[in-house]
Amino acid sequence: MILSYTPAEEDLLFAISYLKLPIELQESDVFCLKIQDEEYLGVKDVMNQLISLCKCDPHDLDLLNDEVVSEIQRMRQLSPRKVLVSLTQHKKESDGENMPSNIPLHNYINGKFLTLADLVLFARVYKSIKEGVKYSIVEKRWFDEFQARLLKLIEFKEIEIVDFEILDIRIGRIEEIKVHKNADLLYVEKVNLGSEEVQIISGLRGRMEMEDMKDKCFLFVVNMQKSKLRGEVSNGMILCAKDGDNLEVIQAPVDIPGEKLYLSGEKRPVIRNFNVPKINKSNEIFSEVMSELKIRNNKLIFKDKVVLCAGKEVITKMSNASVS
Image (cartoon, rainbow, N blue to C red; front, top):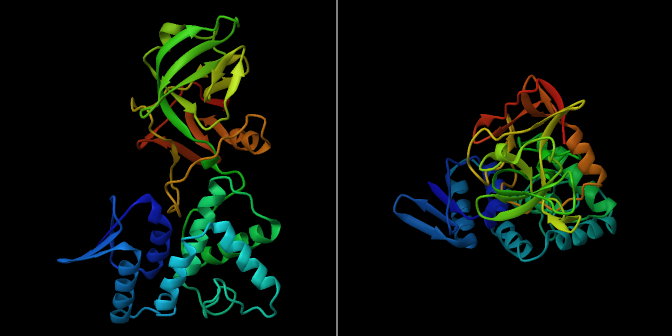
């Protein structure tokens, strides 16, 4: 069996993986389940075929049935927050712990049963949190409790307060570099990020020669809010290792503009594709995340995990340093 999907169906993939069916996944431009010579297109047909497969296999049909499929379709037409607001309000007005997780289902996350609609909702809320949507204390509590319970059932990368994915760090090649006409310590750089070019201002003038930076690949945080430095716009920051007065601009391990950095040994992601929110350098969470990014034994690490890019470690000349 082959399940083709687009990034828009990653919430469904997370839920379907709980069924532990022998399904091979492949990214495509359609949502389609292929079984031998038969193809099932679209959410409704794919989910209904999965129900048929569950009837043949010893799967609990409380997980997926016609009512669950209808609820998934209804839910996916609404924003995750709208569904969660309705859900938490319904729980607040009702008594007892066996309350429906996704009304009007008869299977309960707070009771005996868990449905695929629950998992789809979780994945959708997860994605929206990653993209910076703000939730109330009650709604956030629902997510935290749900995440804690799910982690006992299936393995996935949970959301953490200090989360590496808050930073969108990519390889950038400096195509052009010039001195800032209104600042003695600044360079103005045109950086190739693969699918786009951005302008970045760095305070490296006097620390590194322009010819040592032009046409070379370095690491850039690219999801920062635009800032203006002496009249020139900057769309991110270049990463440097610092040890006292010593500074090293961190070179990329491969020459692939646009390639994104990730952590070694990560658990299975709930959602792979999401829009990383723009962050401000003065943001407290940004400072916390950056404080966990360090050089240890000549390697770029985050907390206790090695940072990778295209499968390669980021190696520096400095053995131990902070990163900024």
